[in-house]
Length: 361
Image (cartoon, rainbow, N blue to C red; front, side, top):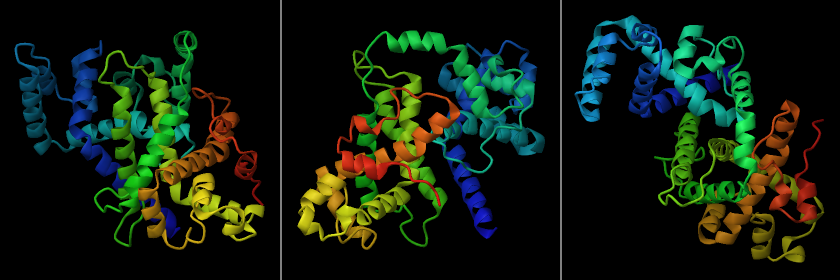
């Protein structure tokens, strides 16, 4: 019971930090959606957007910078004395964060956090924020709504994607995990990708992981070169979800792989009798004799040995695909761009056998 309460507290703290970090971005997007909505602007008040703020935001005589500044001044003054307005605004921004930032990646990888559903909006609020395509589905889960929305445009998406050869998503995800290994190895308390010591909170790790994924994806979502390959929105979401999914479980995946190898035929003899240390690292992604004993020694090796970091990233990603994503995708009947096939980059049959999902006893 205490663990559940602690987890909920950490999730709440993480969401507070995440929303506050994106506050300006979320508020600008909220105003844009209210402006685009075809209904009367007065309805936007139910989302915590007063009419005076909308008037300031839509004043075409001002530059965009002036509109942003004046709208901010209006809402700041209004919120000072109106508790109901503050509550409406807060729930709206939280709904946008859950539905469009936190939710998609976590759900795609079957990662569950407490209170992930946006079940606190009425039909009109949902329509203004997320569009009429979800009308009538407000009592369903966000995952179901996403599925319904995807189904509506599925034919168009298939035409767009299938008419050209799409590169694999796997190398991009592996690049991100490899980069995360090196960042985590620095053990920076300002951007922790693990629980470094007793002062590190799990919500700080969650926040750092999401920020890392966001920064990494910026390279692919908006390429500088206009002639560069363009990933679809679904592909970007899949890549981001996989990055977050692996990094959230990284400690568990590392332990699991070390356990599987050490209890297999490969681990029944001294590493030197099967593979030299360097080959062990670059073939199995493990540091023999050090794993789960001294993580700082492993960190140094990951920083200094690029091949070791690359192989370890491939192994952790493959474990994630085979044991978490692929079973979840099959169970749901959904599909993901390019599939969840680890054998596209792991070609060793012994390793693939060790990675197979194991029945829980």
